[in-house]
Image 1 (tube, rainbow, N blue to C red):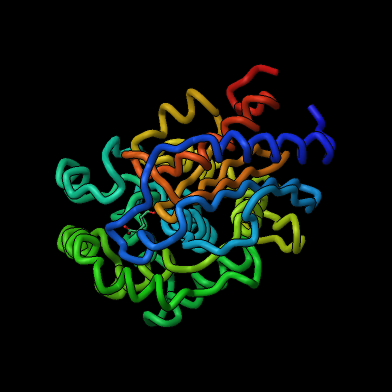
Image 2: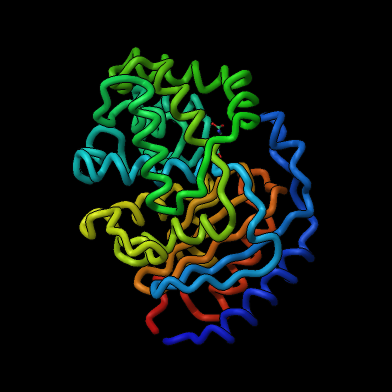
Length: 312
Ligand code: GLU
Protein backbone atom coordinates (compact mmCIF):
# COMPACT_ATOMS: atom_id res chain seq x y z
CA UNK A 1 0.00 0.00 0.00
CA UNK A 2 1.31 3.47 -0.76
CA UNK A 3 0.32 6.62 1.06
CA UNK A 4 0.36 10.21 -0.04
CA UNK A 5 1.22 13.10 2.22
CA UNK A 6 -2.23 14.67 2.00
CA UNK A 7 -3.81 11.44 3.21
CA UNK A 8 -1.26 11.12 6.03
CA UNK A 9 -1.80 14.75 7.11
CA UNK A 10 -5.56 14.21 7.22
CA UNK A 11 -5.10 11.06 9.29
CA UNK A 12 -2.66 12.82 11.65
CA UNK A 13 -5.19 15.63 12.20
CA UNK A 14 -8.00 13.13 12.81
CA UNK A 15 -5.77 11.11 15.12
CA UNK A 16 -4.98 14.24 17.13
CA UNK A 17 -8.69 14.91 17.61
CA UNK A 18 -9.21 11.29 18.63
CA UNK A 19 -6.35 11.54 21.13
CA UNK A 20 -7.56 14.82 22.59
CA UNK A 21 -10.98 13.27 23.19
CA UNK A 22 -9.43 10.67 25.56
CA UNK A 23 -9.52 11.92 29.12
CA UNK A 24 -8.20 8.97 31.12
CA UNK A 25 -4.83 8.51 32.81
CA UNK A 26 -2.54 10.70 34.91
CA UNK A 27 0.97 12.13 34.62
CA UNK A 28 3.71 9.99 36.16
CA UNK A 29 4.33 11.48 39.60
CA UNK A 30 7.02 9.22 41.07
CA UNK A 31 9.48 11.49 39.23
CA UNK A 32 8.57 14.98 40.57
CA UNK A 33 9.42 16.80 37.31
CA UNK A 34 7.02 14.71 35.25
CA UNK A 35 4.10 15.58 37.50
CA UNK A 36 4.56 19.25 36.57
CA UNK A 37 4.32 18.85 32.76
CA UNK A 38 1.00 20.28 31.39
CA UNK A 39 -1.32 17.29 30.95
CA UNK A 40 -3.17 18.69 27.95
CA UNK A 41 -0.13 18.68 25.62
CA UNK A 42 -0.79 16.37 22.69
CA UNK A 43 1.11 15.65 19.47
CA UNK A 44 1.43 13.10 16.72
CA UNK A 45 4.23 12.86 14.12
CA UNK A 46 4.82 10.48 11.24
CA UNK A 47 8.34 9.93 9.88
CA UNK A 48 8.32 8.53 6.35
CA UNK A 49 11.32 6.65 4.96
CA UNK A 50 11.87 9.39 2.33
CA UNK A 51 12.56 11.89 5.13
CA UNK A 52 9.16 13.59 5.09
CA UNK A 53 7.67 14.37 8.49
CA UNK A 54 3.92 14.84 8.87
CA UNK A 55 2.69 16.19 12.20
CA UNK A 56 -0.18 17.67 14.14
CA UNK A 57 -0.59 19.29 17.56
CA UNK A 58 2.30 20.21 19.90
CA UNK A 59 4.88 18.43 17.77
CA UNK A 60 7.77 20.74 18.67
CA UNK A 61 7.24 20.65 22.46
CA UNK A 62 10.23 18.84 24.03
CA UNK A 63 9.52 16.15 26.63
CA UNK A 64 11.56 13.55 28.53
CA UNK A 65 12.51 10.50 26.47
CA UNK A 66 12.50 8.23 29.55
CA UNK A 67 12.14 4.53 28.78
CA UNK A 68 12.32 5.03 25.02
CA UNK A 69 16.03 5.75 25.59
CA UNK A 70 16.33 1.99 26.23
CA UNK A 71 15.84 1.39 22.48
CA UNK A 72 18.84 3.61 21.68
CA UNK A 73 21.17 1.99 24.21
CA UNK A 74 20.04 -1.50 23.20
CA UNK A 75 20.73 -0.60 19.55
CA UNK A 76 24.17 0.76 20.46
CA UNK A 77 24.97 -2.41 22.40
CA UNK A 78 23.99 -4.51 19.38
CA UNK A 79 26.22 -2.35 17.19
CA UNK A 80 29.15 -2.88 19.55
CA UNK A 81 28.63 -6.51 20.53
CA UNK A 82 26.22 -8.03 18.01
CA UNK A 83 22.54 -8.83 18.60
CA UNK A 84 23.22 -12.38 19.80
CA UNK A 85 25.48 -11.17 22.63
CA UNK A 86 22.73 -8.84 23.82
CA UNK A 87 20.22 -11.70 23.79
CA UNK A 88 22.60 -13.99 25.65
CA UNK A 89 23.78 -11.54 28.32
CA UNK A 90 20.59 -9.55 28.85
CA UNK A 91 17.70 -11.37 27.14
CA UNK A 92 14.78 -11.19 24.72
CA UNK A 93 11.80 -12.28 26.80
CA UNK A 94 8.90 -10.24 28.18
CA UNK A 95 8.78 -10.03 31.98
CA UNK A 96 4.98 -9.79 32.20
CA UNK A 97 5.54 -7.45 35.15
CA UNK A 98 5.96 -3.67 35.63
CA UNK A 99 9.06 -2.00 34.18
CA UNK A 100 10.77 -1.59 37.56
CA UNK A 101 9.74 -4.91 39.05
CA UNK A 102 12.17 -6.50 41.51
CA UNK A 103 10.05 -9.66 41.50
CA UNK A 104 10.72 -10.08 37.76
CA UNK A 105 14.41 -10.23 38.64
CA UNK A 106 14.05 -12.44 41.69
CA UNK A 107 12.13 -15.19 39.91
CA UNK A 108 14.81 -15.35 37.18
CA UNK A 109 17.94 -15.52 39.36
CA UNK A 110 18.44 -11.75 38.92
CA UNK A 111 18.75 -12.00 35.11
CA UNK A 112 16.87 -9.05 33.58
CA UNK A 113 15.29 -10.88 30.56
CA UNK A 114 15.09 -7.82 28.27
CA UNK A 115 16.98 -4.55 27.67
CA UNK A 116 13.62 -2.72 27.72
CA UNK A 117 12.88 -2.79 31.46
CA UNK A 118 14.88 -0.83 34.02
CA UNK A 119 17.01 -3.77 35.14
CA UNK A 120 17.89 -4.80 31.59
CA UNK A 121 18.50 -1.20 30.57
CA UNK A 122 21.04 -0.67 33.34
CA UNK A 123 22.64 -3.97 32.45
CA UNK A 124 22.81 -2.81 28.82
CA UNK A 125 24.40 0.51 29.80
CA UNK A 126 26.99 -1.39 31.83
CA UNK A 127 27.65 -3.78 28.92
CA UNK A 128 28.81 -1.02 26.54
CA UNK A 129 32.54 -0.73 25.86
CA UNK A 130 33.54 2.44 27.69
CA UNK A 131 36.57 3.43 29.73
CA UNK A 132 34.68 5.50 32.31
CA UNK A 133 31.30 6.92 33.28
CA UNK A 134 31.55 10.11 31.22
CA UNK A 135 32.58 8.34 28.00
CA UNK A 136 29.75 5.81 28.57
CA UNK A 137 27.31 8.70 28.84
CA UNK A 138 28.72 10.60 25.86
CA UNK A 139 28.48 7.59 23.51
CA UNK A 140 24.83 7.09 24.50
CA UNK A 141 23.97 10.77 23.96
CA UNK A 142 25.76 10.73 20.60
CA UNK A 143 23.78 7.65 19.57
CA UNK A 144 20.47 9.21 20.61
CA UNK A 145 21.38 12.21 18.44
CA UNK A 146 22.25 9.98 15.49
CA UNK A 147 18.92 8.15 15.73
CA UNK A 148 16.99 11.42 16.14
CA UNK A 149 18.63 14.81 15.70
CA UNK A 150 21.38 17.02 17.05
CA UNK A 151 18.66 18.92 18.98
CA UNK A 152 18.48 16.15 21.59
CA UNK A 153 19.93 17.43 24.86
CA UNK A 154 20.12 16.54 28.53
CA UNK A 155 17.63 18.38 30.74
CA UNK A 156 19.28 19.35 34.00
CA UNK A 157 15.86 19.74 35.61
CA UNK A 158 14.64 16.27 34.65
CA UNK A 159 18.01 14.68 35.45
CA UNK A 160 18.28 16.29 38.88
CA UNK A 161 14.69 15.33 39.68
CA UNK A 162 15.39 11.69 38.74
CA UNK A 163 18.88 11.36 40.25
CA UNK A 164 17.54 12.62 43.59
CA UNK A 165 14.71 10.07 43.66
CA UNK A 166 16.01 6.95 41.88
CA UNK A 167 16.54 4.80 45.00
CA UNK A 168 14.53 1.89 43.60
CA UNK A 169 16.69 1.77 40.46
CA UNK A 170 19.85 1.93 42.58
CA UNK A 171 18.64 -1.12 44.49
CA UNK A 172 18.01 -2.94 41.21
CA UNK A 173 21.53 -2.06 40.00
CA UNK A 174 23.06 -3.58 43.13
CA UNK A 175 20.96 -6.77 42.72
CA UNK A 176 22.20 -7.06 39.14
CA UNK A 177 25.77 -6.53 40.26
CA UNK A 178 25.53 -9.14 43.01
CA UNK A 179 24.35 -11.69 40.44
CA UNK A 180 27.06 -10.85 37.88
CA UNK A 181 24.63 -9.15 35.50
CA UNK A 182 26.01 -5.63 35.80
CA UNK A 183 29.27 -5.23 33.91
CA UNK A 184 30.47 -1.88 35.24
CA UNK A 185 30.27 -0.08 38.56
CA UNK A 186 26.54 -0.41 39.38
CA UNK A 187 26.10 3.17 40.56
CA UNK A 188 27.76 4.43 37.37
CA UNK A 189 25.34 2.28 35.35
CA UNK A 190 22.37 3.65 37.28
CA UNK A 191 23.53 7.25 36.98
CA UNK A 192 24.17 7.03 33.22
CA UNK A 193 20.86 5.19 32.71
CA UNK A 194 19.08 7.97 34.60
CA UNK A 195 20.76 10.59 32.39
CA UNK A 196 19.75 8.76 29.21
CA UNK A 197 16.12 8.90 30.41
CA UNK A 198 16.44 12.65 31.05
CA UNK A 199 17.06 13.88 27.52
CA UNK A 200 14.48 16.12 25.90
CA UNK A 201 13.04 15.30 22.48
CA UNK A 202 10.21 16.61 20.33
CA UNK A 203 7.51 14.38 18.86
CA UNK A 204 9.23 14.89 15.48
CA UNK A 205 12.52 13.66 16.99
CA UNK A 206 10.75 10.62 18.42
CA UNK A 207 9.19 9.83 15.04
CA UNK A 208 12.68 10.09 13.50
CA UNK A 209 14.02 7.59 16.05
CA UNK A 210 11.38 5.17 14.81
CA UNK A 211 11.99 6.24 11.22
CA UNK A 212 15.63 5.18 11.54
CA UNK A 213 14.46 1.67 12.44
CA UNK A 214 11.71 1.64 9.79
CA UNK A 215 14.31 2.71 7.23
CA UNK A 216 16.65 -0.24 7.87
CA UNK A 217 18.97 1.65 10.24
CA UNK A 218 19.44 4.80 8.12
CA UNK A 219 18.20 8.04 9.67
CA UNK A 220 15.60 9.18 7.09
CA UNK A 221 16.29 12.88 7.72
CA UNK A 222 20.10 13.01 7.90
CA UNK A 223 20.56 9.90 5.66
CA UNK A 224 23.30 8.73 8.03
CA UNK A 225 23.68 4.96 8.48
CA UNK A 226 23.26 4.48 12.22
CA UNK A 227 22.39 0.80 12.71
CA UNK A 228 23.52 -2.22 10.70
CA UNK A 229 20.55 -3.74 8.85
CA UNK A 230 21.05 -7.14 10.51
CA UNK A 231 20.43 -5.57 13.92
CA UNK A 232 17.11 -3.96 12.99
CA UNK A 233 14.94 -7.12 13.15
CA UNK A 234 16.28 -8.14 16.61
CA UNK A 235 15.64 -4.59 17.89
CA UNK A 236 12.06 -4.69 16.59
CA UNK A 237 11.57 -8.16 18.09
CA UNK A 238 12.64 -6.89 21.52
CA UNK A 239 10.24 -3.97 21.13
CA UNK A 240 7.37 -6.29 20.23
CA UNK A 241 7.97 -8.42 23.31
CA UNK A 242 8.34 -5.70 25.95
CA UNK A 243 8.07 -2.24 24.39
CA UNK A 244 4.67 -1.41 25.86
CA UNK A 245 5.51 -2.80 29.32
CA UNK A 246 3.05 -5.44 30.54
CA UNK A 247 0.54 -4.30 27.89
CA UNK A 248 2.78 -5.49 25.03
CA UNK A 249 0.64 -8.51 24.17
CA UNK A 250 -2.56 -6.49 24.00
CA UNK A 251 -0.77 -3.87 21.92
CA UNK A 252 0.45 -6.51 19.44
CA UNK A 253 -3.10 -7.80 19.24
CA UNK A 254 -4.74 -4.38 18.78
CA UNK A 255 -2.12 -2.53 16.71
CA UNK A 256 0.47 -5.06 15.56
CA UNK A 257 3.49 -2.75 15.43
CA UNK A 258 6.80 -2.97 17.32
CA UNK A 259 6.65 0.00 19.67
CA UNK A 260 8.18 1.59 22.74
CA UNK A 261 6.72 3.90 25.30
CA UNK A 262 8.14 6.02 28.11
CA UNK A 263 6.70 7.51 31.27
CA UNK A 264 7.34 10.99 29.84
CA UNK A 265 4.26 10.37 27.66
CA UNK A 266 5.90 9.38 24.37
CA UNK A 267 5.16 6.28 22.30
CA UNK A 268 6.77 5.34 18.98
CA UNK A 269 5.57 2.58 16.64
CA UNK A 270 7.51 1.22 13.67
CA UNK A 271 6.07 0.10 10.33
CA UNK A 272 9.10 -1.66 8.81
CA UNK A 273 10.09 -0.33 5.40
CA UNK A 274 7.41 2.36 5.46
CA UNK A 275 7.23 4.80 8.35
CA UNK A 276 7.18 5.37 12.09
CA UNK A 277 4.37 6.98 14.07
CA UNK A 278 5.08 8.84 17.31
CA UNK A 279 2.55 10.14 19.80
CA UNK A 280 3.03 12.30 22.88
CA UNK A 281 0.75 13.29 25.74
CA UNK A 282 1.64 13.05 29.45
CA UNK A 283 -1.29 11.17 31.07
CA UNK A 284 -0.46 7.46 31.49
CA UNK A 285 -2.54 4.37 32.13
CA UNK A 286 -1.81 1.82 34.88
CA UNK A 287 0.91 0.11 32.83
CA UNK A 288 2.74 3.41 32.19
CA UNK A 289 1.66 3.98 28.58
CA UNK A 290 0.35 7.34 27.35
CA UNK A 291 -3.39 7.00 26.89
CA UNK A 292 -3.63 9.59 24.11
CA UNK A 293 -0.46 8.52 22.29
CA UNK A 294 -1.79 4.97 22.11
CA UNK A 295 -5.16 6.17 20.82
CA UNK A 296 -3.52 8.30 18.11
CA UNK A 297 -1.15 5.59 16.90
CA UNK A 298 -3.91 3.01 16.96
CA UNK A 299 -6.15 5.28 14.91
CA UNK A 300 -3.58 5.70 12.14
CA UNK A 301 -2.38 2.08 12.19
CA UNK A 302 -5.88 0.65 12.05
CA UNK A 303 -6.99 3.07 9.33
CA UNK A 304 -4.08 2.13 7.08
CA UNK A 305 -4.14 -1.57 8.05
CA UNK A 306 -0.49 -1.36 9.13
CA UNK A 307 -0.24 -4.37 11.46
CA UNK A 308 2.84 -6.43 10.65
CA UNK A 309 0.67 -9.51 11.24
CA UNK A 310 -1.87 -8.48 8.59
CA UNK A 311 -1.77 -10.66 5.44
CA UNK A 312 -2.41 -7.72 3.10
N1 GLU B 1 13.54 6.98 34.24
C1 GLU B 1 12.38 6.15 34.44
C2 GLU B 1 12.65 5.11 35.49
O1 GLU B 1 13.72 4.59 35.54
C3 GLU B 1 11.99 5.53 33.14
C4 GLU B 1 10.82 4.62 33.28
C5 GLU B 1 10.02 4.46 32.02
O2 GLU B 1 9.85 5.38 31.22
O3 GLU B 1 9.50 3.33 31.87
O4 GLU B 1 11.83 4.81 36.31
